[in-house]
Length: 448
Image (cartoon, rainbow, N blue to C red; front, top):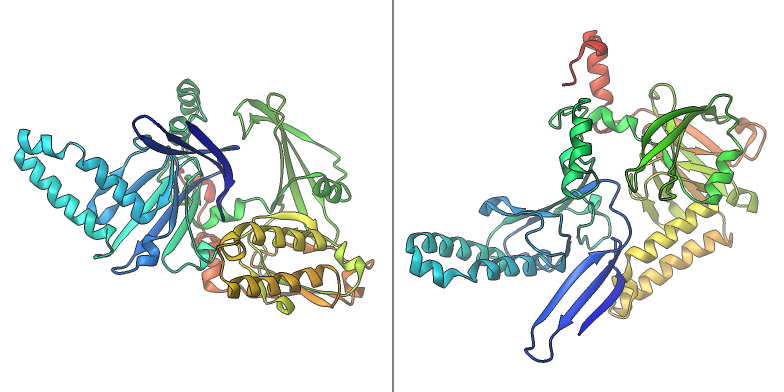
């Protein structure tokens, strides 16, 4: 009999767990499949496990069919498609790998004792990692973006031993996971492609590539209504392209508009007639701001909750009265209102803190998180005045004024600040300064 369960993994996404058990021979098998679309980008998790760290060994791992798992210290690599999708722990992942290798070990000893001895030595090292007797690193690299390694705090950016890196898929990776047919890949290859190893323009680019990202993605009717107040395009440019969901031919419409008291932005809209997928991105127009910005809003009236907000991916959010801080990149880019922003924060926290809110949570955890959510709900109900602070190193975020001019809006303030050296490096601004200082002609740089 096969039993199927649709569930959500905290901090991750919806999955379907299929469990099979034979009543005649007692054979059992569990598999994990993923509901919905591929991730927009690939994901690479790097977990550093110290000797004796049993909590790290107990971290939950979701491994999809397309994921490649490596342990550099053992020169171990589990290629994609060699193991079915599974939901396990770091310890369980190593245990399953050791069990699979041991399956034919007796036959190897009879046929090739030398090779069997080498494998025994390798298994001893693998067992010591599984038992926490040595330091090692686990890397889970999934081009489909469907794998996951648990971070107890819910934010890998603040996890000392876990690093999560999103990246754009290469053409070959798109072929490997089925997003691109081999013949289509060959046709596009003849048109040329930036080298995958290019550190500034390739799929794993660093530095200045961060400046080209969209400020936010427009999703839902509410975001459409907000942007419609500011968009009156005189000229719409149509460009041929491909659907992000099904890769069919689709048209991308591009136009530039100006948001009052903010800046010029470029809106790119894509609609697929084949599968019906729609997406819209907002990109900053013009150059990079010389300084970062800190926008502070004192929320004390209903009109403040209805203010429009553009929160860029580069921005962080804090609400001091609720002891809340949302770090850069945690929620992506958003187009919403102040009330909608707070609703999305509450929803995201409830989804990602299942272990701290469910039946298995301790009384202390439930009490602590309950008091925290009570503060946020009181803020949304305006039972007290509170402060919304958005800090953006690229000055790409915006809160709409209620008055005719931001200068006459007494509850809204905006101040510029000098970016730190770390922020300049993260967003590639130091690279641009270097090119400008050396007087290089950017058109003469060979990207291939």
